[in-house]
Amino acid sequence: MIEKLIKANRSYRRFNQDKPVNSDLLKELVNLARLSASAANLQPLKYIISSDINLNEQIFSTLGWAAYLKDWKSPKEGEKPAAYIIILLDTEISNNKWSAYDCGIASQSILLAAAEKGLGGCMIGSVNKKRLAQILNIKPHLEIMLVIALGNSAEKVIIEAISDNNDIKYFRDEKDVHHVPKRSLEDIIIKVYN
Image (cartoon, rainbow, N blue to C red):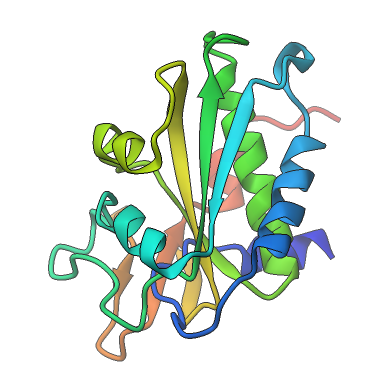
């Protein structure tokens, strides 16, 4: 079951915008992040969730999408996310290097749970944090770590082997199918001790 969820959990960047994601489901996803591991059990992460159409538009305006896709700037109208989860670091609780690991663990928990619920998502680190903090009226001690875009996916994503030229850049083919090259297991396991 977990293997299926991991394979289904891709970075989806186009959604069926007209299919809403309710705030109760977003709270369920954040609750699973809350229950996930945290370095020294400090639990420094806080969250803002939005399924509000007007606020989502403002959040969307602060995000950068798919740097490798030079001819594609962002989802067009009708393909935008239906919801967002903004992950914040409460620097009054922790501001050490381990906080980034907490954010990664929480994000993966959220996205795996979203995949189980039939949703697609994308972790977005390219964020105009100053502008987003103003839009959301975020207090200075809360640092924006990551934005997770969520919705019903409107694209097909295929995992494939890296080509002979070792290009790891994701791309879209002539049928607009998104391809994600992955290194082979043999390439990443350096040694096996039995």
